[in-house]
Image (cartoon, rainbow, N blue to C red; front, side, top):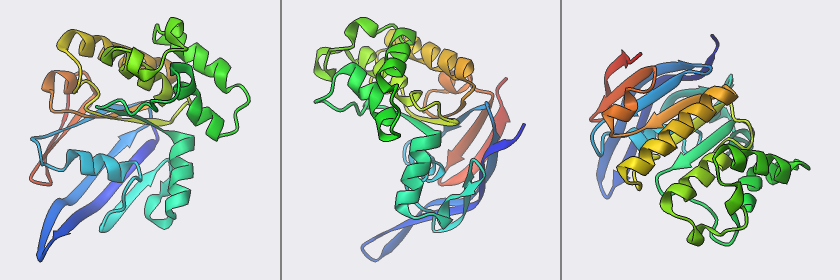
Length: 227
Protein backbone atom coordinates (compact mmCIF):
# COMPACT_ATOMS: atom_id res chain seq x y z
CA UNK A 1 0.00 0.00 0.00
CA UNK A 2 1.05 3.59 -0.62
CA UNK A 3 2.07 5.83 2.29
CA UNK A 4 -0.47 8.52 3.08
CA UNK A 5 1.63 10.13 5.84
CA UNK A 6 5.42 10.18 6.18
CA UNK A 7 7.08 11.79 9.20
CA UNK A 8 10.86 12.29 9.08
CA UNK A 9 13.19 13.67 11.79
CA UNK A 10 10.42 15.83 13.27
CA UNK A 11 11.40 18.33 15.95
CA UNK A 12 9.22 20.88 17.76
CA UNK A 13 10.00 23.17 20.67
CA UNK A 14 8.45 26.19 22.35
CA UNK A 15 10.06 29.10 24.14
CA UNK A 16 8.71 30.04 27.56
CA UNK A 17 10.44 33.16 28.86
CA UNK A 18 14.15 32.40 28.55
CA UNK A 19 13.63 28.64 28.54
CA UNK A 20 13.33 26.41 25.49
CA UNK A 21 11.01 23.46 25.94
CA UNK A 22 11.50 20.60 23.49
CA UNK A 23 8.12 18.95 22.91
CA UNK A 24 9.03 16.50 20.13
CA UNK A 25 12.43 15.15 19.14
CA UNK A 26 13.57 12.85 16.31
CA UNK A 27 10.11 11.52 15.39
CA UNK A 28 10.04 9.11 12.43
CA UNK A 29 7.20 6.91 11.17
CA UNK A 30 4.93 6.37 8.19
CA UNK A 31 1.29 5.36 7.78
CA UNK A 32 -0.12 3.58 4.74
CA UNK A 33 -3.46 4.23 3.07
CA UNK A 34 -6.47 2.79 4.94
CA UNK A 35 -4.34 1.92 7.97
CA UNK A 36 -5.67 2.47 11.51
CA UNK A 37 -2.96 3.95 13.73
CA UNK A 38 -2.98 5.22 17.30
CA UNK A 39 -0.65 7.57 19.17
CA UNK A 40 -0.52 6.97 22.92
CA UNK A 41 1.45 8.30 25.84
CA UNK A 42 1.08 10.08 29.18
CA UNK A 43 -0.28 13.63 29.45
CA UNK A 44 2.29 16.15 28.26
CA UNK A 45 4.17 13.62 26.14
CA UNK A 46 3.54 15.55 22.91
CA UNK A 47 0.68 13.50 21.40
CA UNK A 48 -1.61 16.39 20.48
CA UNK A 49 1.33 18.50 19.25
CA UNK A 50 2.33 15.63 16.97
CA UNK A 51 -1.24 15.31 15.68
CA UNK A 52 -1.30 19.03 14.87
CA UNK A 53 1.96 18.76 12.93
CA UNK A 54 0.75 15.68 11.02
CA UNK A 55 -2.40 17.53 9.99
CA UNK A 56 -0.61 20.74 9.02
CA UNK A 57 -2.25 22.77 11.80
CA UNK A 58 1.25 23.79 12.92
CA UNK A 59 4.76 23.68 11.43
CA UNK A 60 7.73 21.79 12.88
CA UNK A 61 11.03 23.46 13.72
CA UNK A 62 12.75 20.89 11.53
CA UNK A 63 12.02 17.64 9.77
CA UNK A 64 9.30 16.94 7.25
CA UNK A 65 5.65 15.97 7.09
CA UNK A 66 4.50 14.52 3.76
CA UNK A 67 0.71 14.22 3.64
CA UNK A 68 -0.85 12.58 0.59
CA UNK A 69 2.41 13.08 -1.31
CA UNK A 70 2.72 16.79 -0.45
CA UNK A 71 5.48 18.21 1.78
CA UNK A 72 3.58 20.50 4.16
CA UNK A 73 6.37 22.88 5.14
CA UNK A 74 6.59 24.07 1.53
CA UNK A 75 3.00 25.33 1.72
CA UNK A 76 1.66 28.64 3.03
CA UNK A 77 -0.92 28.62 5.84
CA UNK A 78 -3.70 29.18 3.29
CA UNK A 79 -2.43 26.34 1.09
CA UNK A 80 -2.33 24.00 4.09
CA UNK A 81 -5.92 24.99 4.91
CA UNK A 82 -7.00 24.11 1.36
CA UNK A 83 -5.21 20.76 1.60
CA UNK A 84 -6.94 19.98 4.92
CA UNK A 85 -10.34 20.90 3.55
CA UNK A 86 -9.84 18.56 0.57
CA UNK A 87 -8.13 15.57 2.16
CA UNK A 88 -8.39 15.67 5.96
CA UNK A 89 -11.15 15.04 8.51
CA UNK A 90 -11.03 15.90 12.23
CA UNK A 91 -12.78 14.65 15.35
CA UNK A 92 -12.02 16.45 18.62
CA UNK A 93 -12.66 15.65 22.27
CA UNK A 94 -14.90 18.72 22.67
CA UNK A 95 -16.88 18.15 19.43
CA UNK A 96 -16.28 21.70 18.06
CA UNK A 97 -19.69 21.99 16.44
CA UNK A 98 -20.80 25.48 15.49
CA UNK A 99 -23.48 26.40 18.07
CA UNK A 100 -25.50 28.63 15.74
CA UNK A 101 -25.88 25.92 13.07
CA UNK A 102 -28.21 22.93 13.10
CA UNK A 103 -26.89 19.38 12.95
CA UNK A 104 -27.31 19.12 9.19
CA UNK A 105 -25.77 22.57 8.64
CA UNK A 106 -22.73 21.56 10.73
CA UNK A 107 -22.21 18.46 8.57
CA UNK A 108 -22.72 20.39 5.32
CA UNK A 109 -20.17 23.13 6.15
CA UNK A 110 -17.02 21.40 4.78
CA UNK A 111 -18.87 20.55 1.57
CA UNK A 112 -20.19 24.08 1.14
CA UNK A 113 -16.65 25.41 1.54
CA UNK A 114 -15.71 23.24 -1.43
CA UNK A 115 -18.63 24.62 -3.44
CA UNK A 116 -20.39 21.23 -3.46
CA UNK A 117 -23.94 21.73 -4.75
CA UNK A 118 -25.04 18.44 -3.18
CA UNK A 119 -23.83 19.44 0.29
CA UNK A 120 -27.17 18.93 2.04
CA UNK A 121 -27.98 15.65 0.29
CA UNK A 122 -24.57 14.27 1.33
CA UNK A 123 -25.02 15.64 4.87
CA UNK A 124 -28.38 13.85 5.12
CA UNK A 125 -26.78 10.57 3.94
CA UNK A 126 -24.17 10.85 6.68
CA UNK A 127 -26.73 11.71 9.35
CA UNK A 128 -28.58 8.54 8.35
CA UNK A 129 -25.31 6.57 8.75
CA UNK A 130 -24.78 7.92 12.29
CA UNK A 131 -28.46 7.39 13.17
CA UNK A 132 -29.36 11.03 13.70
CA UNK A 133 -31.28 12.12 10.62
CA UNK A 134 -34.28 12.74 12.90
CA UNK A 135 -32.17 15.35 14.74
CA UNK A 136 -31.16 17.24 11.59
CA UNK A 137 -32.80 20.51 12.65
CA UNK A 138 -31.58 20.43 16.24
CA UNK A 139 -28.83 22.75 17.46
CA UNK A 140 -25.82 21.39 19.38
CA UNK A 141 -27.24 22.68 22.68
CA UNK A 142 -30.30 20.47 22.11
CA UNK A 143 -28.18 17.32 21.67
CA UNK A 144 -26.47 15.05 24.20
CA UNK A 145 -22.68 14.71 24.21
CA UNK A 146 -22.88 11.38 22.39
CA UNK A 147 -25.20 12.85 19.76
CA UNK A 148 -22.88 15.84 19.28
CA UNK A 149 -19.90 13.53 18.75
CA UNK A 150 -21.87 11.48 16.22
CA UNK A 151 -22.68 14.71 14.35
CA UNK A 152 -18.97 15.58 14.52
CA UNK A 153 -18.18 12.16 13.04
CA UNK A 154 -20.61 12.75 10.17
CA UNK A 155 -18.96 16.13 9.53
CA UNK A 156 -15.46 14.59 9.65
CA UNK A 157 -16.35 12.16 6.86
CA UNK A 158 -18.34 14.69 4.80
CA UNK A 159 -15.52 15.58 2.38
CA UNK A 160 -14.51 11.92 1.87
CA UNK A 161 -11.15 12.54 3.55
CA UNK A 162 -8.12 10.46 2.71
CA UNK A 163 -7.10 10.62 6.37
CA UNK A 164 -8.99 11.32 9.58
CA UNK A 165 -7.35 12.61 12.76
CA UNK A 166 -9.23 11.92 16.01
CA UNK A 167 -7.95 13.57 19.20
CA UNK A 168 -9.33 11.79 22.31
CA UNK A 169 -12.71 11.27 20.57
CA UNK A 170 -14.27 9.65 23.64
CA UNK A 171 -12.65 11.94 26.23
CA UNK A 172 -15.87 13.78 27.14
CA UNK A 173 -18.20 10.78 26.95
CA UNK A 174 -19.24 8.13 29.46
CA UNK A 175 -17.94 4.59 28.83
CA UNK A 176 -21.10 3.23 27.18
CA UNK A 177 -21.60 6.23 24.89
CA UNK A 178 -17.89 6.29 24.10
CA UNK A 179 -17.97 2.64 23.04
CA UNK A 180 -20.86 3.33 20.64
CA UNK A 181 -19.02 6.32 19.13
CA UNK A 182 -15.83 4.26 18.69
CA UNK A 183 -17.75 1.45 16.99
CA UNK A 184 -19.33 3.98 14.62
CA UNK A 185 -15.97 5.63 13.93
CA UNK A 186 -14.35 2.33 12.93
CA UNK A 187 -17.36 1.24 10.88
CA UNK A 188 -17.44 4.49 8.89
CA UNK A 189 -13.66 4.47 8.51
CA UNK A 190 -13.73 0.96 7.03
CA UNK A 191 -16.77 1.59 4.84
CA UNK A 192 -15.34 4.78 3.35
CA UNK A 193 -11.73 3.52 3.03
CA UNK A 194 -10.23 6.29 5.15
CA UNK A 195 -6.92 6.22 7.03
CA UNK A 196 -7.48 6.73 10.76
CA UNK A 197 -4.98 8.34 13.13
CA UNK A 198 -6.15 8.31 16.72
CA UNK A 199 -4.65 10.11 19.72
CA UNK A 200 -5.75 8.51 22.98
CA UNK A 201 -4.68 7.71 26.53
CA UNK A 202 -7.04 4.70 26.46
CA UNK A 203 -5.01 1.56 25.67
CA UNK A 204 -8.15 -0.52 25.09
CA UNK A 205 -9.14 1.92 22.35
CA UNK A 206 -5.59 1.97 20.95
CA UNK A 207 -5.61 -1.83 20.69
CA UNK A 208 -8.45 -1.59 18.17
CA UNK A 209 -6.00 -0.03 15.68
CA UNK A 210 -3.45 -1.90 13.56
CA UNK A 211 -0.40 -0.06 14.92
CA UNK A 212 0.35 1.79 18.15
CA UNK A 213 2.99 4.52 18.49
CA UNK A 214 3.96 5.24 22.09
CA UNK A 215 5.50 8.62 22.92
CA UNK A 216 7.24 9.49 26.17
CA UNK A 217 8.95 12.78 26.86
CA UNK A 218 8.59 13.86 23.24
CA UNK A 219 10.37 10.81 21.83
CA UNK A 220 9.18 7.56 20.31
CA UNK A 221 9.30 4.89 23.01
CA UNK A 222 7.77 2.10 20.96
CA UNK A 223 5.97 1.27 17.72
CA UNK A 224 4.02 -1.98 17.85
CA UNK A 225 1.50 -3.84 15.77
CA UNK A 226 -1.72 -4.39 17.71
CA UNK A 227 -3.49 -6.59 15.21
